[in-house]
Length: 396
Image 1 (cartoon, rainbow, N blue to C red):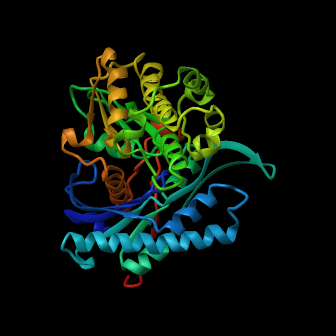
Image 2 (cartoon, rainbow, N blue to C red):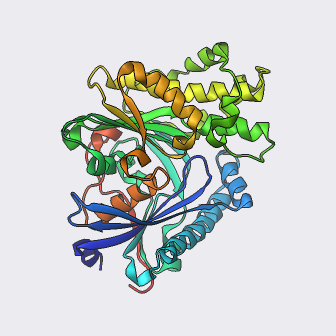
Image 3 (tube, rainbow, N blue to C red):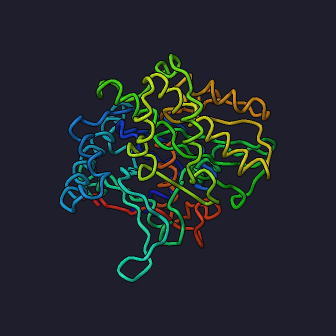
């Protein structure tokens, strides 16, 4: 059955993504035509389904290791599997199709812990990344082959297990005559570098630091949880960047770590706001300072890691941060002197909202064909991997 799917000239796959901001589930129904090495990709439908408030609170509780007991993690993984399945079925209906018109589901899952660097544990070297949202539950409830839990295969090969999207960015965005930077701004920011005319092994990528995470945390604190993000950058636009606090935050060692590197809520979660909250600054100034920190970290990453090797032509911004006009204006202020044009995914005919969900559909398409879908040059792995665990539905 898997071989039949892989050999079809047209495959339809639902990509599911829930990120570090825990806003909800992105569901993208994707049509892929042609060979897996260079498919023509078309977005048929997209939906963004917010998490129920109680589920969202429960996920945030799991970010604290002491609260993440085996029972709580297992139950939440089951619940998320049910919610992911509902999102998949909903986006299929929204496209005017039925389950029999679709071949598979690809689910990134919800990251609750990411510590990819090797440490000694019980006397042996170990790495760790945990994404929950049980694939077997998705397969059961949708009746579709489900590919999930992508990161661990790269971790097993000695890689960081992140970022994974650069593989699909190479397939979909590479150019023969322009060097492109693709900057996703979700909870965490990550950059993919596609040199002009590059081969797969020339692509590199890394997490730049906080994306929306610290901005969101400030807004949530300021509004007592009524608002989860700075809509359009409105709060930050009313504030003023505090230079002293900004310089203190710039001293974070992560920004100068060598590549490959990745990060997450373990570093840039709410606990990182300690020096921010005791500063006594107005909430608007804190939002402005966090927004400037994100913009600075992206520009600093370009100058530190990319510019010594390649001069970029454009920065394509995706993710929720691409709708923050204040953040975009700060990015343009940083990149204009460097000769780099800042654009959004919409400027080049793609969707910022759907980009990562589409990416996991493409990764699943490769997995189902038994083809590698990782970039060791990005993750630091010893070899390529076929990432994704396959759950078969009852009807098979």
